[in-house]
Image (cartoon, rainbow, N blue to C red):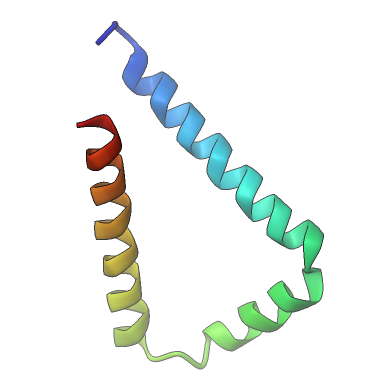
Length: 67
């Protein structure tokens, strides 16, 4: 692995997140506004577990791809 590739990977990951988020907001702004307004109704425990599942899935995917 070359020096500085960790930062490059982080920048690419951040760019992908921004591109995907932007695509969803551009394609369906009404849907996103509706979903964001409902987030406050979701119990903290459900949000926490959903976040943990997403975290584990993301780390697992990166681990599977990068090794």
